[in-house]
Length: 334
Image (tube, rainbow, N blue to C red; front, side, top):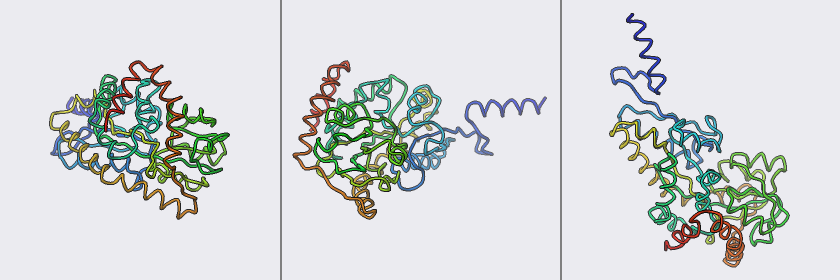
């Protein structure tokens, strides 16, 4: 009978995500998944790994196992998994979930952010309060804010003014950029950033835009001829926070919840300190690989913004309930 009871206890522990931890008692194990390469080189993986280390150091009976490189969930499956409580934590490009919540397209709207200082001010704005409320209502909470700048690159020619994308098959990270690029004459192919390399290698793609971190960690310099760096006129910024399942978070003890929040705060501070070096690292990496590197001029940026206003901005305001008000809140942030 005693053996049977022990077996039942073990089975129950496994079912709820616990493992034996000797004299220290039961340890709750959480799973974190993301699509980005593991190891040093991608700041999003480093954020999640930092959170895992900090939570372990807090000694509150909590462990986080990190599964990088889409090894646990495919990129587009993570939102559903997080909101349903099937996955515990993720580093997630929020616009990937815009099919379910079209408001999220505002977090990858051309020209809306502009630079890292403004991105940090956006985090505490009414605009982001609305976005985070939608996330929470769906079942996800933000552990760390993160905005990544991005670039353009092509196998054919440098992308600067809108006419330079005409006739190219390009990957854009979300609907707003897709609408703008299509309006400029590009053909669109959708895929997560983890598939861009293969898309270029197999000639499915001529060009892409994605985050500076992805341009480096996915080694896209091996496939492209010219990189358009963010520079002084950054058209592309994307919100890629560390998220946690709300239902999973609420089941933790107060001490465990605080450990998660404290770790998330440290990861965000690490991100804010390191991310500004990311663009410089990308430029250096591409120049060393023999890729031509250019920047958009202010005239190029303004021309793109006019295209965006007549396509992405217009469509967002018309098709998304409250979309015009949401954009106004974002633009109101100085």
